[in-house]
Image (cartoon, rainbow over all chains, first blue to last red; front, top):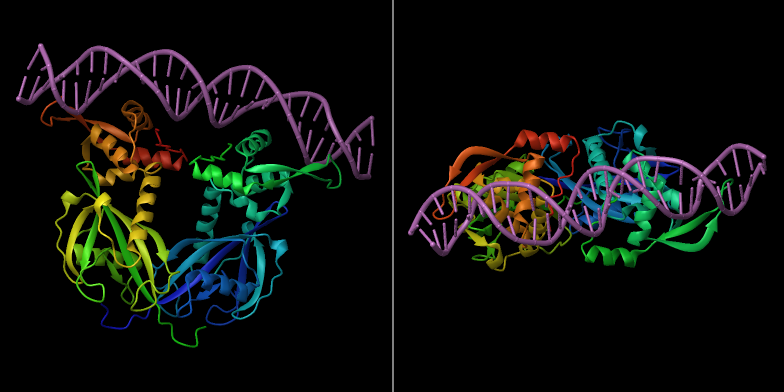
Length: 231
Length: 231
DNA sequence: ACAAAAGTGTTCGCTTTACACCCATGT
DNA sequence: ACATGGGTGTAAAGCGAACACTTTTGT
């Protein structure tokens, strides 16, 4: 029981990744107000009274960037650095999201002066402890890619197989064996061939594939380990 | 920017597991005050101003149960049920810990009228959403046992191999192959033989083993996957 | 001598990996 | 015809799973 009323504020932050042209991007905003005005930072802000954490992240994302994500999960709660935010003692619940950048128009409003996709490899130095949060989110993305089909959130609903390959090798940061990768995905039944083809300039046209969600759900329930490592 | 001052309170909860006599236990307290007086619940409480989350859990655990854990990690932050606590809008950061029950004397004070180890299989119905939290923590424990050497936190520093085997099969809820398990642990170098022996009543005396931390750290850095499934 | 727990190797099958050539199209 | 990217199979090695008897002690 606190004698003194609790002064701690609850905030949310979102690390949203996008993928395009074999590049991994992260969504950042430029602060409009405060001591850290004009610094780049993760979208986020304080939770409103009676608001859930989940709706708070989604609201802040929408307000500050115009983006709504196709995938968003809780990442970690930062509250061990009491000086993190110079203004007050803040506990920040961070989220990790995925979206196709081209499916969204950026519309910064509210606390955000600007909103932009940065290549993860060329992002600016961020305010607060946001560099660390981005790093943790990236690790989570890499780890999760191995055992959950989250990569599909970053692609259109149908895609040539090479897109999926490139996505994996880009995010994991190393080459993967095309034949083994395709074999695994197809025999597991996670990915399904459609009867459409695309021709992208030169080269043989590619079949289009799609994620087979019901098959995946079945695998997951049966406890199968996906194990998409593929050295 | 909140126009109305934020009223949300930040709390911490701890799910502490113990292991003894081939049984998995969870540490609970009986509430002394409030609407949920006399209900069993997880140890925890509100974070103090300027206090870190980590020290808040440790403090509450110590106050309410007398226990300090050898292992404690953040589990999940619950803040999507605004009605969770009837008194106020509370965001609760939950932690998951391990300890050897016999190494600790229970000394309930403060908000706790009583503190007790319950067999996980026979725990009472808990206050708030604590049943769900315990369930999530148990899942995390089971999953993590496969790829991190956290089981050793539940054993003395030296132990007969059968203790380790029993711990795994108890927590995972199925038998494991003694020979394969021992082989894996020894060839990975996670576990090391000492030159001591113990005789426990009848049967052949057992060698004592210990966790080889430096070896494990090396494995972890080299990115080796432990993979301690062992159907 | 017998009951109880500890200790120990080998075989088989499957999964993972490594690897290179032909195919369909645009220019 | 050639350049570009798409599509495909097989063999070898390594790993995980299954499995039962001997040893040491207490009673």
